[in-house]
Image (tube, rainbow, N blue to C red; front, side, top):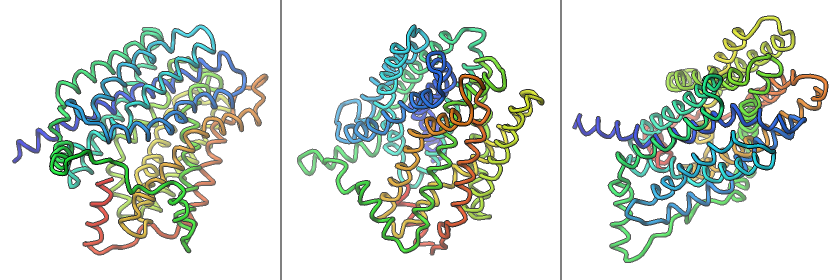
Length: 442
């Protein structure tokens, strides 16, 4: 039994390689592409608009590809065919990005790269629950997210060493790592052996036909109707709080490299490495902070995290504005901001789940969470870039206020959190087990 558990755990790390490739590429992408766009575009708002292209494409293509893979049946499984096509395609277009010579060429490579990544991201996420039964999916999700975090660390690390091997070299190394990860994934993970896929095929054989997936899922309009009808507006307020803090996070993630080069006067490579100091604490503190939140309350944990982030960003703003203290204080403050973000990120969707009036509504509320977070990912870089252009004329001054603008959106989210009155209702043991099972099955 102990050996079986060990094998399953090791399998999860191999499954996580698919998610590893997405975070590896996007981390290096965010570190460099904003700087490439700045070379052609004057206004930060326009840079932010193009940096949101991947999220816009992802919102459109990922649900479609997720549904298509649900209804795919091959000898390789239903997820792996798309992963096998998507990762090499993404790697090729990713390696081409630094070769651009014009803005049009850059946008073309960005466009096709975003499509390739969206082509397999849903499948990369869905592969784990196909292998892992509901009772073990919390552990499985933790391992998959850890692999994603490692991908982010590798991506930012390649940004740092770009000064030694060139940006083209860093992008090429990342592309090679993506392909190598795929080869290991194909070698070690046989989707046809997953319990979920085997059970599906057996059921279809008994019923004499393909079972169409995707039926019975609530539409976005139905989801909105559900939360607007609630007498207590905690879900609606929580949703807007999620939107505002993701606008800050996604906007800063996309544009932080430009802040590092133009305000902190650091090199492209070092500026592209700055998000690493936010990402690292998330890997370290996500699990223990989930335990702490269970003791002090999830809403309080989020408030604490937001206060930490706001404080850090305001101090960074003054450090950057005065250019007096150098880079080390900024790095330390980014680490603490990452600690604050761990408090926020680990508890947000859990509160949404707890706000659901019944287990049957958890899917509806999960859809609401992803709608607001993806909407923020699409608009965040443009909103923060536009406000920065408004307060700093890009023709005559660096983007000093970028960090402060991010803090403003976090302050709005913090204010909203004081109006969220539910999300930590005490349940009976039976209710807790039933809700946990429903969440794991999503």
